Length: 409
Length: 124
Image (cartoon, rainbow over all chains, first blue to last red; front, top):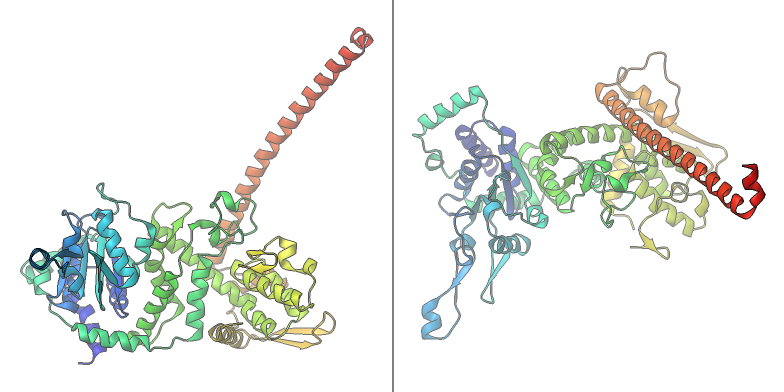
């Protein structure tokens, strides 16, 4: 059996033991196909967060997995490392015994919302730099699979910083089971003697997974796919009033803005560039595993890559709100094609053309991301003496690229 | 300096939705053709309304709008109406403020005049 088939088999084995949430499982599998993958499962009590986490880890790492539970009193020695007392007493040497969590390939964090801030900071460092520190000693951590889960509604939660959550490639939201699915679950439990985790076989070895990760890394994505990913993320970041640096945030910042009804007006804290990286990894994995990655696939991936990385102006139900915004994004992309704005930009990049520029200006009034690109070109044309500053879109609409004394920063 | 991938993305998009620019590069004697070869919007799609909105084209007798586009337009209209209402309320408040300010200014002026010109008090 080749690696691709084994990965598909892994998904099948999980689906045999976990009812519903098929899309979440598929995305979770895809997310394992790049080095140092991190997955966050966010759901209410008793929905199957820990079960899903352990099923996947068992399927990849077998018994080489360590679970750190936020619900228990976790100390640094248990998560990172502790001093070897005999060495210190007999030889006066500070020798660190690295914790099993650091050494294992499969790392599980149960109820991460309950982890104390010190442990969280160590794990944050591990995810950021691929290393850990204890007693002035450093340990490099090789490739791994890290899966965490949390119930944000839990009253005993610590509020972890947004950059910590940003380090998770995707965030899965699990739902409770429907009536018919509950019957299915009971049948499955009986079939596996009420022990789903023990019955889960190791379908791929970690070495095979690493091989798959190497293959996925070599996949070259179609320029349209790369472009759509970048465009999608930019739409969730762009703000003509520079909300990233502004102390005043939407909706107050949007008052009187030309783009007040656009997607940018619904986002308070924009996405980080890690969203682009996570989407690219998923797109490559989908291309490798399924042989294709369409724009529709990217939108579905975005539903798991974006929610834990941004703050909306108004949140009623994050998933429903995101679905609504992504649907608007789909319409926006279709509008862009109708306006043929990228073709115009392509022409304008080759050479300045006043007629094409006129049409591009009209398109820019409808699209912040496009306006940014056009304004950047306007600056270039002004420097070349092809356009007067007074005639530009940036002057007439009062939109400016962040710059000082004409030098962009 | 443009990234090579960025250029390839734009070229690919230009292939899908081509435009042809003929004639001089200044404002006179140019012609832009929209070569809708492959991505010709299907009849019954929302192309008519979008073309008329974005490209200033004339609409046909019957305009068919996709539900999503209609929803988006409805949402935008609702937003504009809300904005309109909000501005109208603000305008009314400002009007009241202006009248109050005008009245008080008049009152203060009469008071000052009556202090400066004693005859004025008599007239009053």
